[in-house]
Structures are given as structure tokens and as C-alpha cells.
Length: 159
Image (cartoon, rainbow, N blue to C red; front, top):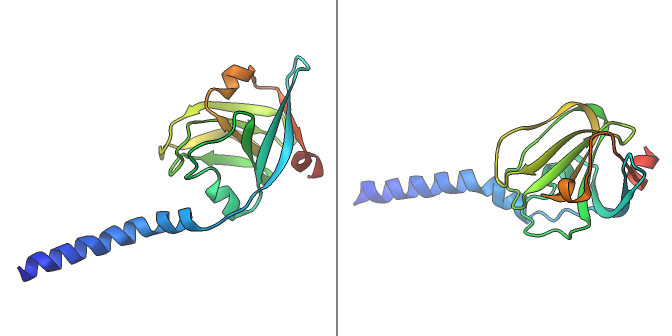
């Protein structure tokens, strides 16, 4: 019985060591500024969105993790401060997402559609990018977003 209790205690300790980082990340309150963002398609058509902006390392780390819904015309814009290769993943992300990878000028250089929730698979930018825009899965198809389209927002104009 003593050995059984000891084993149970060890298993519980391991459980908390493994899961506590995820719980603490989920519980930390992180706020994001919101701003309008326009996707300007090569045809000239404009798509208006309201996005949250992730500019700090803590904001970029959290992103859309743990969220269970996002408005249809919403998204999150990640600003990495300079063009660089970027790798994203979907760990702790409940929502399936489309990702747009943009260079410093805001031009879409790569697109990942229907990123799988909770996946640890690396989603690579495919080259140097400054911005990543995450949208609800299916948005790229629905809005006919293509490589070469551009984004414009206060965040992209200010930098």
C-alpha cells in the first residue's frame, strides 16, 4: 500500500509539472490593441476586417490560443518587427485557422489554409516575412485571397 501511494503521488506530481505551464499560460491576462485592417486584392477589391495586433513576444506567444470563437470579420495580426523567417504552430489553439504571411510591405507571400487545431506541426512562412495574419479557417477561399494581395492597417503604416 505504501508503494502504491508513493507511485500515485509521483504520477500526480508529474501531471502537474507537465500541465501547469499550459494552465498558467491560459490564465495570464494578455490584452491586445484592436484596429481596422484592409486586404487590398490585386483586382482592387477591398476586404475590411477588425484585427487584434500582437507585437510583443508575450502577445505573439499567446496569439489566439485557448479561444473558442472569433467573429467572421476578425483576425489577429502578428508583427515581428522586421522581415525574418517565421514558424507558427497550433498548440493550444482551438480554432482552425487560415494564415497569411506578408513581407514588410504587407504583400502576401505565402498562405496556409485550414491549420489544424492543437497540432504541433510547424507551419513555415516559406521565406522572410514581417507579418502573419490569422483568420478563421475558410476565410481565404471565401474572400478569394491570393498571393500578391496586400494588407493595410495602422500597424503596417506606422512601421
